[in-house]
Image 1 (spheres, rainbow, N blue to C red):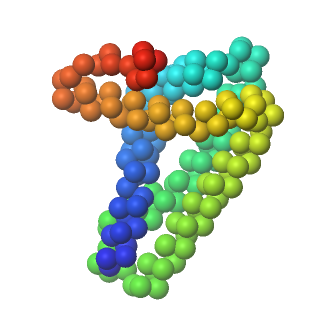
Image 2: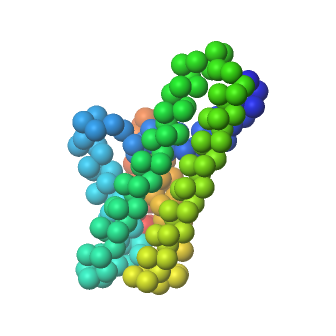
Amino acid sequence: MKMLQKIAWIFLPLVITTAAFGQGPGEDKEKDEKIEALKVGFITKELNLTSAEAEKFWPLYNEMEDKMKEIRQTFRKINHEMRDSEDKISNEDAKKKLNTLFENEQKELDLKKEYSEKFIKLIGEKRTLKLLSLEHEFRRVLLERLKERREGGPQDRKPHGGKP
């Protein structure tokens, strides 16, 4: 059981991110749309995409995101199963679930590599590299803002010299 707990802690950041961004369909649809609009604006601005680039970039990005969501659903399913039956799971089942989690991580990595090549052709190596850090930065800023709202603190703080 200790091994499962360690694995759960390793994947905890993914769960938090998924909870913040991956609410089910129909749950707080307005908030989801607002978050998505903020993300589009943030990434478009930070990558300095032209309208022609954005026109090609966003369908490709959304396609990648949809595929990533499919892969992450398996993680959420396993995580849910663990919470419901952690004490009842056999070592063999735990091993199978671990293998599935690692296979999914590999699928996610392979997908990132595949789409990175597509993004490189569209926006170049430097902006593709920046895109990977922007996704993380956006999640960090969003989580920070959510935390500030809950605590009643400043909501207009901007990261890195005034960028939204």
